[in-house]
Length: 423
Image (cartoon, rainbow, N blue to C red; front, side, top):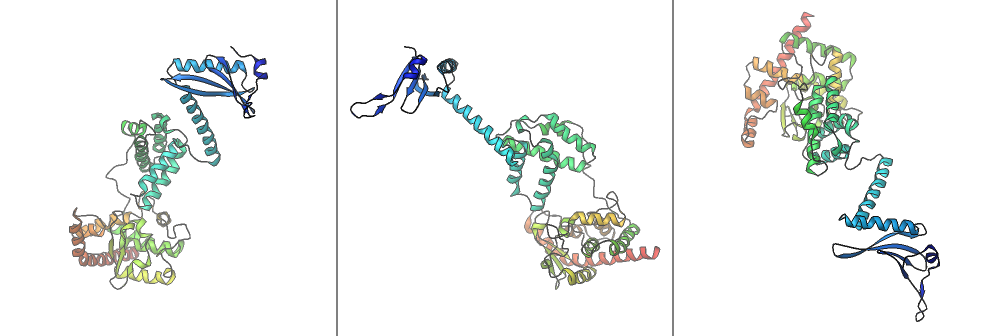
């Protein structure tokens, strides 16, 4: 018999005469719809069978859910069953979506990224590759990603990103003539989406299609860092560094830039130099593999001129950890400090960079007749794939490298003095 509002209002739990307690009462409205009446509440429930199993689903409390609304809900439930949908599972999905929406609101309030956003996947990828990268490489790539990829794509769900979105990012960097940055950002964007596919957060890689499919200007693979190799111009550069540094730069920057031509280390390695790495007795700078690009320890024979520069510097910074200390977070000079110092000297980035001392050394040393293996070992380039052979070669060539570094230092001094006399 169908229920009425009057009957529902009058419904009460049944008194058990034996126990003296109130027992719940279940009133049927037909078609699987029931009203459970207890001492404290009246609740609608729907009984149904799905795939041979009987199930029960709550439809809400009376009077919040009235008789008419309860019947409508029960009718929709029967429609779902007819369509092969389990109402109970559908209810769980709805609750899950509501819960996810609430969590999303909380994340937004805290400034956190959605787990399926490009930002979250990018940060997860960075954390995944962190163990295989050098700290300096990780820091540099993360900085680029936070500066370029996250502002452009970070808020989007990774599976919603379209090729046009990626193209806009790449085109912006190309328009700004940032070809090196474009290359690195493009490569990392491709890797982030590949990672997203691997962890099941997206199915396609729109970045790959854009980077490989369009004619963005790629940096010349044979390009080098701006350098100077003509002996007369090298002499003028060294003289300009000597005269300008004493007038416009602090001791740490001036010392680093004066030292750079004689050791031709990568700028990132040079600025991280520590006093504990200097072996005064053997006149060598022993650099741990962690600081080298190839992760292999490196020895730099120190010419007399270099030892003199270091001895002077030691009086001022020798009590600390770094050769060239700084008040920044890293505790040592940044490579940008060297670049700015070169600009102060009067050389733009297209004329000369701190990395250019390495290219300068290769050219001049070849012209001076030094063997290829000796030069490239001093640059910390690997000559042999076999690690045992490579270690043996380094040990064998160390005396020749000592001689080469001293001869080269003397040659640089000669070029600078010639420039001084011609000025």
